[in-house]
Every structure is written in C-alpha cells, then in structure tokens.
Length: 75
Image 1 (tube, one colour):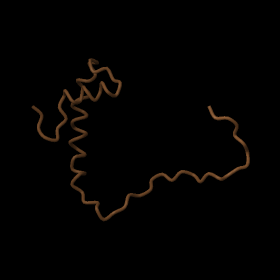
Image 2: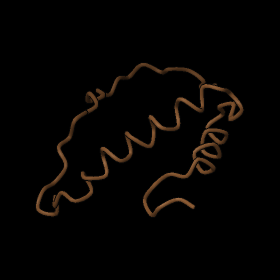
Image 3: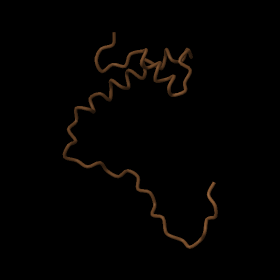
Image 4: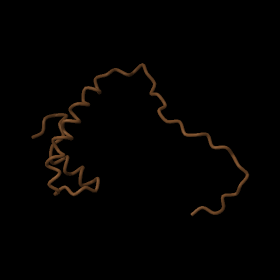
C-alpha cells in the first residue's frame, strides 16, 4: 500500500494510460521512480506560505488592435 502523498505505481500507470502512453512499455519501469523522486522533491514547495503575495503575470498577451478588415468566414 502506498504511503500518504506518494504516487502508487498503479496510479502512475493509470495516469500514464489516460495521458495516451503505453502503460505496458518497459520504459515505464524507469520512468516511475523518476516521477516519484520529482514529486517528492517539489513536495516541500507546498509548505511555503505565499498567502500575502499575488502571482506575477509571467505572460501578457499582446494587445490586439481593432481593424476594419473583414477576415471573412471562419471555419
């Protein structure tokens, strides 16, 4: 049985299959421990108190200027 907060192998294979990956691929045996280690390494990020901060806008889409050109039918 998996420990709380740890991704079980069964859950990993289910998620991989739902993402369109072949869960029977031998590479999954190598990928599973890697994913578990990555998840464990970022688990400490959940302990950081960010309640007093607003997220930075990392991407601001360019402003679209109105034009009088008819783009024609779409589709």
